[in-house]
Image 1 (cartoon, rainbow, N blue to C red):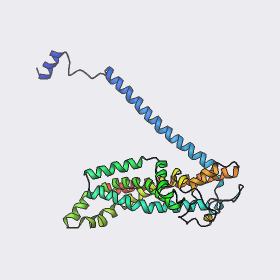
Image 2: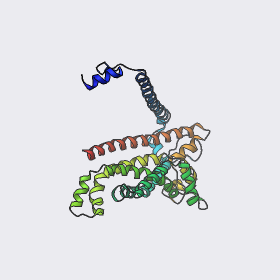
Image 3: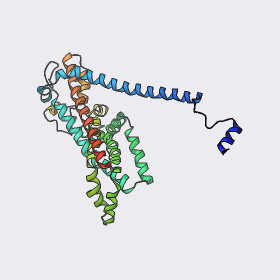
Image 4: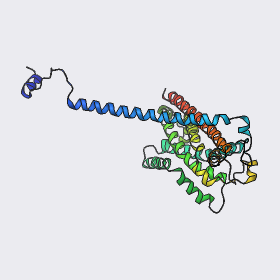
Length: 307
């Protein structure tokens, strides 16, 4: 008699008996099915909401899309015609300036956390700070920048760029950090074995290997910043009449698409509301194409680094 047989005879448990589901197993299966069903329903619900939003904007805004809508100034008085050219240029200027501010800072922070302070307390602290910044409501950032750059000085395009750069910074830094961590370690080890200084390894080996991922992170941050409304309402919504003709005057309030949508949607005439739907269509199309393209580029870069 084996030890298992002796133990089974003493306890009344037969180790050779077939396994049968118990009440606990059935309960766990039910809970698992409920959890999977709830998660699936939530995912489907999110997709359905996105489809409804995209379809509504496309249905009501696509009819406004034309060359004139993208290249003409808005009408001086409520009525048909006109376009959103100053808003498009103003948004491009503000977002470009915000990218110039946030991109180098975000990449430097990511390099510090991955190449010079990996695993240290300061790197963990920086990661916590970036996560907290990423969770800040945009209206809080808007109030901060308003008190720092706008109060007593007037609205301006560069103040709006500073606010958007604060929103973009944690996105670029955290995404760039994840991409830098995917760079194979043998590249660093090879450079160290040749006696290459760390800063030259970073500039000549690490950054070129992660350039595609950093570009992807930047595109995602640009898509996020382009749709922000609260900071620009407080910081760059009052546009002087002459600035319509010079949308590069960053020292003054600049036209931008989010504020244009807000202001036009508040008007009573149907032409302004139609213009708001058209501007929403342009902004949504830009965000969707940028986000999808950035995700595809990120997946390609991850496969390249992992392979």
